[in-house]
Amino acid sequence: MNQTKHRFLTAILMLVTWAQASAADDIVIGQTTDLSSVASGQTRDFNAGVKLYLDAVNSRGGVGGRRIKMMSMDDAYVAANAAKNAETLVSNPAVVALFGTRGSDPTDAVIKVAERERVALIAPVNGADAVRESKVVFPVRASYKAEVDSILRYFSVVPTDMAVLVQDDKFGRPLLDHIEQRVKEGKYTNIRLVGKVVVDRKATQVNAEVDKILAMRPRAVIALCNPTTCSEFVSQLHKRTEATKEHRPAVAQLSNVDMLAQYQKVGGRGMVGNPFSQVMPNPHRASLQISRDFVAAAAEQGVEVNYRSYEGYVSAAVMVEGLRRAKTVTREGVRDAMERFGEINVGGIPVEYTVDKRTGSRHVELVSIDAQGRLLR
Image (cartoon, rainbow, N blue to C red):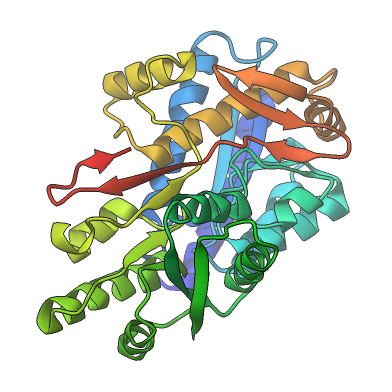
């Protein structure tokens, strides 16, 4: 099927779905996200968690007797596609909020549409500054800068020479600036930056970058890159140091990276000692009500329990709380309700939104993978 015909049929299906949603008086939430790129597995996990929560809510009668319907469109992690999808979604008057975008560029594109239409964008899977600077965006996860700070704090326990592998885009550059500023202001006195290596965001060959990093002889590297580039860097770094018997620095990465997929590519020996920041608590933490509910629902429906599906579940819980608090379940009502949350506890996880702040959750923790693929916390 050619692309034009595929898009035409998709548009027809969307119209049919809208008609069904309006007839049933569902609460419709719009989502444009990555459902088909090489990294789309992360979105599928996230959406599986969302569905678990919404199915449970809908089975109990929904919100105010109305079921919640998620209308998802694929943008393949391309900003232009995300913008078009967002325009399509907001053209439907039944859509009361946008939800769960993924990636810096696609999310920025959707924010522009959401701001123009004054539609709330809830729980983008993105920790960039832009999601906390917009008056219509309500992030659930902690910021990328908070993730970086947790990594710097971890390595600052002992004197550490650190290098940075940085993607040359709006994801990487601001975080590099943040690292340099933190070290300059003496926040982490045990860390000495020995250099940075800039990598193209679409790079698939990183041998030159590995050479440059190893020449700096760091004890640790913070890799600010997309999942594909980061995975290739860790893989090549492992192969190189295994062959030459050079010291392999620990490589710290953020929550945008798929650590389990990376383990499958690199293998256990190349992953040992590499910390990953995560923006959700341990999904199996029995002390949290929302964790217990999630694990039970996932077991019943055959959904894999991981940080991504858990983030989807928690994000859906925050969104539903906003719908319940809305005086009227309209675009304005949902946006105003989210803005007036204050600091609340969602199943044991605190989040905060006010007129002036879009904090969401502050939770960040570090995990690693042992040689057998087991998570270590």
